[in-house]
Image 1 (cartoon, rainbow, N blue to C red):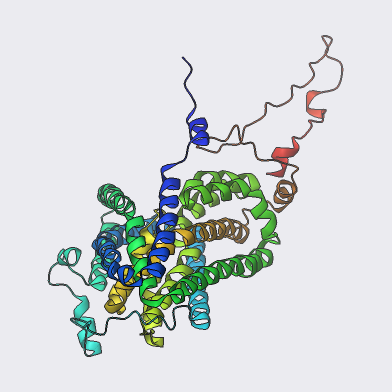
Image 2 (cartoon, rainbow, N blue to C red; image 1 turned 180 degrees about the vertical axis):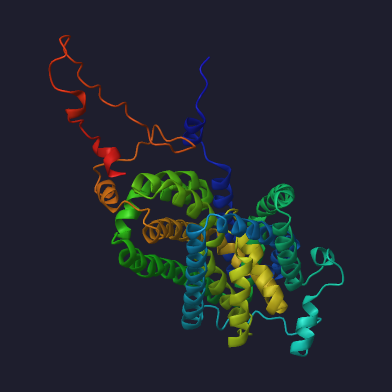
Length: 469
């Protein structure tokens, strides 16, 4: 009996992530309805959203520890390849910082959460440092492992950096430790995925509580944040990334996006850019980026070049602070930006890691705002596609830019590919992404009498596809 191919089964059915997405939409609509029709009852459901935030807070320390330690290992790996790795890491740092700054600017212009006044006046911040010395001393934990069971995110970050650099110095032994931490990270993200399956319940309680307390004001504020975030991502791609790509490689970003249309559809269906990673490497090689540059830049960029996630983290933080009636000061915004630059590395691969990173940043600088993450839960799924698409586009641009800087980019081939003369072969794409080698044309044999033109003097037709590489 013939077996139905996995691709065909997926095409006929609905993926689990789609069911979760649908459930979140239903929960948000139901929460809005309950909050508007029965405001007092809706406001009383606020504890459900706080319970979900508690589950997310539970995952902050292990998520940050694993991503930072493995991220430092990735830096070491990228740095060993020399010029390509160094340029890539420098580019990623600059672009992520630009994205964070843009998110801060737009968030300060829109102020979408203003007027909601969801703060708890009875909340007291425990353990707040009274001076710079106290703040610095508070970063040092009592033991090496105590931050993993405590609530100080800065201590977790400090220990993660120490462990990461220590593993670097161990050489080959360190690789085995990193493999063990990757296994731990797999368990951590599996638990995080399990928690996300109760996101519809948390979203329902949070939205019902907010709408029950503020009415239509919360709906308008959340809608403004979503629209503002989407517009910011579109402008970042259409202006910042487009300018960088054109000035560097003279390539039109909209032609590249058309070339990557199938990957965009895949990302929208899964809400994660991780699903398109192998295809992006293959397509960048086909476009004219050399195999070493594509193999280094794209995977490293998936951990260090998170433009969409950076915009989301800053705009969501400003929204929560404004909604709870205690906006972030300029110094707090700068401190949060520095924290996000470090802690966001590795947040792109798993849906929900962005929520944990957001909660971690707020826990560090303004723990009184952490409960506000429940407000974002209801619309986080709606913004995840924009995050993933922006991250993906940023990494595609990065591979072309780095290849151009290192003279490993075939611009003539790129023009041929982008105008459709050299289409990407979907049927023969393999994991190693090797370009098929055509058999050389046979030279005519010499006549038996030894007379005739020499084979060396024959003109061998050139394969235009391989010549373009």
